[in-house]
Image (cartoon, rainbow, N blue to C red; front, top):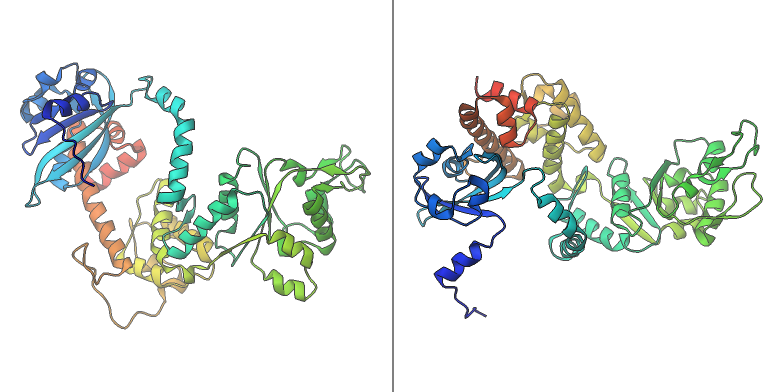
Length: 472
């Protein structure tokens, strides 16, 4: 239904003047055509004094800088950076181009917020976050989805469906069994379930059941009294079940749990009670069990290698994480994610050539996400030329059989025949072009790596690398 309410010009101006942020509009020549009353806090000038100022006047008076609108206009792209005003305020500015019917920039609108330390924004945010956090979290679950987890990418529909399912599972207190091949991210999923559960404020305690000998795993889980056995600590030891009180106990590689310990774990799951080794008094604990395995526990039950009753107690909910061969839509985003992650970790700026992207995208990744992350870290660190070519890739990847027909990289972003790999490469090239231009123009204005780092919200070492790469 179309609204019958139409704002009059004066009413609209009154509303805009109540905006917490500054709203500044410039025309294609860079002249101010509108600014709301928040500008007085940023530049010490009233809106009447600002409106009508020509571009050269803004430059001469140095009211704020570095100027962002010329860059947004040139690249026809929304840009954000920190700026410093003549009053000493630190401003976070987003410049957005507005286009006419011919696709040319007609106006630039700048949204400006004072982020100076102690300006009150942080206090306002702190006082509101408890309420807003609940509202936003609820809305995200129902409408937007949260498909980006630390070290976990869910671009494919199959993974997005799994994450949606994990939201519902996380909210209840039942046990969970996570299955999937090695390296698919079972441990990451376990932590994610804990982080969204009512137990999120409690500890997340993990143990790899395959990493300890049978003689030690029982004492690690349940603890022991002093003098329980030869070599025991004189004061005894608290078990992981008790350590995970009010939280989550993650049992990785649960299929390796000895049968004798399986019986004791089953008793704890049923009654929330257990005995320490050498103990005579029953103890209680409250922790949620999340288990994971790359084995087929159902087959192990048939073979008598795993207790059936424990299997079904653990498998109240089961999450099956598919291998990368079933998640093709996640491979390119994962490559991009880890390339960025390890560039940042090692203060590098490595890029992937089109041929390298193609080979990485076509590799089957038998080690799944873990193998992909390890390979990307290796080639980022070991490559010395700035661009990672097929020669920098492991032999088993660079020797993949080439496809019969070589497809050219599309020249246009909206090319309908472009593959996902080609679109990724196009985006990388475009991002590199924009980054180079922005760094060159900003460095010409600010002159130092420190000021460049502040304007782009990057570290000074990264700014220095950009200057060496793009400005020398």
